[in-house]
Length: 216
Ligand code: BG6
Ligand code: MG
Image 1 (cartoon, rainbow, N blue to C red):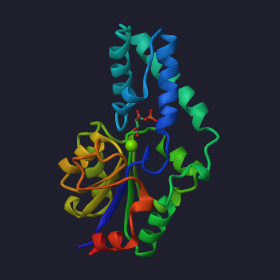
Image 2 (image 1 turned 120 degrees about the vertical axis):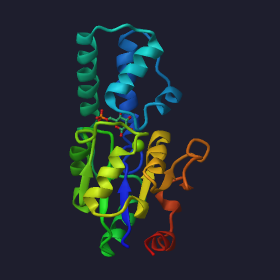
Image 3 (image 1 turned 60 degrees about the horizontal axis):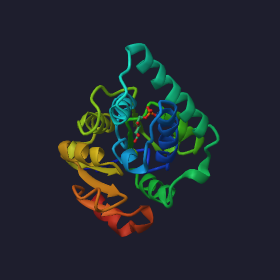
């Protein structure tokens, strides 16, 4: 049975969480309240729409449908301005090493992201060619922690869910991988990602022997 690998994007392949944060913070400030780094943790892996709902809750702001739609667009335009200049220097450490290792062994690789901006980001950082399958915010209906995004990924890779490995930096993403019956690997803070099967600070801590072990 072959193993498939599924990577989250934001916070796993590139550190775009900081740009999401800046764009949400700008909107919060315009609406007259603060938005902290701690609050931003709740936004990781969560859809744009759900993020705005949480943001408005934090600021106790009531919005009409028209305002809500406008703020969604405004946040995304600010975010797009931040990511416009992204290049390969913003790939997180050792990500290319891992992708290259898997590619050389013909391991099928998917992206499983909540973001609707996933494809242009992969293009900008020049990693698109590593991915056999892209599942992003444009193709899912149920957000993480629902397993949908990863189950679609496994299906498109032609790999059984229980033979898939998922890299995630978000609590919601680890939960989604676990719900999908996949092997979850947390990338980031062990306190936050305690539900993951394995946890690493970043890819520099993952040895090729460890990856090799996941393939057999
Ligand atoms: C996830 C991020 O990958 O994508 C979330 O972790 C973000 O913070 C979500 O809200 C949606 O992204 P986008 O680019 O479609 O607004
Ligand atoms: Mg993420």
